[in-house]
Amino acid sequence: MPPSAAHWFGTNDIGQDIYAQTLVGLQKSLLIGLIAGPAATLIAGIVGAVAGYFGGFVDRALVWGIDLLLVIPSFYALVLLSPLFKNLSWLALIVGLAIFGWMIMARVIRGQTMSLRERDYVKAARFMGVPSFTIIRRHILPNVASLLIIDATLGVGAMILSESALSYFGFGIQIPDVSLGTLLAAGSQSAVTRPWLFVLPAATLVATVLSTSLLGDALRDAIDPTSGANRD
Image 1 (cartoon, rainbow, N blue to C red):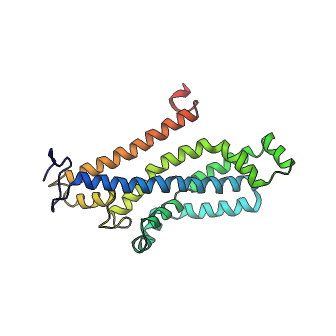
Image 2: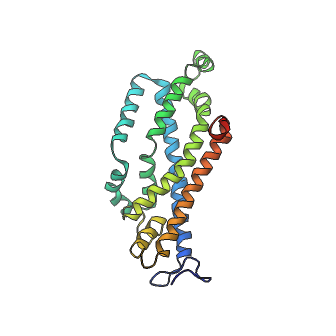
Image 3: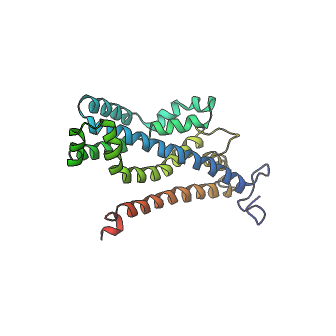
């Protein structure tokens, strides 16, 4: 049944309300994005700060690990790990998304940390015998917090897209569970004859990702007034 006053997004073959399913799918996709995005940022902050602060062998080992993970196509790696997602809960999908989503930001944080460790207040703290991890926690991470906050916000949208893509191809959320990806997969089979089954969940996905991107831009402008449009 096409969209109507009773069913805003229409219904599918067996009479299920697409609007209700879209809300449930959006809830699941948002939950995955809101956990996996900040989790990846947390890993990036810790690894990048440790690598940049200690340097030497620690830096080389962590950078080698980062480069190794960057070489591996994350989507195909998650596809290979998809049997775990089927046997375990959707929490396994969150872990997989977080593991393969932190490397680029870790390199950025590493570069920032290498600059911050040469600041006078960091050198003074080292001279006074302050433990290294205390310096990282009190002096390094607070100075890169703006980057981490922005990355976590933008990461939510990226994780929602990744989850939707995996679920669309049958490697993420599994039916009878619902996410935006599973709704798109079901709707694509009749996208020409009954476009509302595909177009409306797709529009919801686009609006959600766009909203997180706009929120990330707003946070960047608020935290760093010299960025974006405020630079002029």
